[in-house]
Image 1 (cartoon, rainbow, N blue to C red):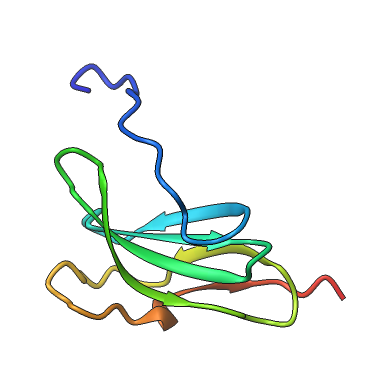
Image 2: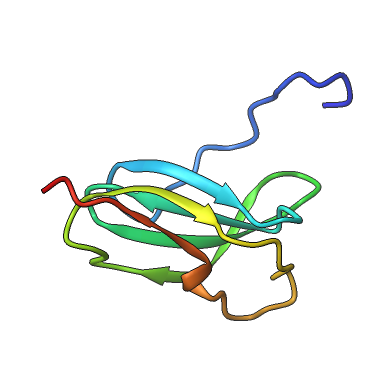
Length: 97
């Protein structure tokens, strides 16, 4: 909103079990979600103007030996025009062992 307050946009599935963390790319057109229990990272397209989540752009499943805790966009490359997202840019599992 123009005055800086937040407004509800939508409720949508994360693509896995127990979404724990999310990260946006530098221009906000991609949303990466870390799903803790399913140990997956799912990357979604995102409409910048409305904030609505679009189609799945990429996914990786059965990551790491431990539960997935967070996902971080590792650099500021603009992936808006990419058809396939480099999942190496979205990482962050932590082994509890």
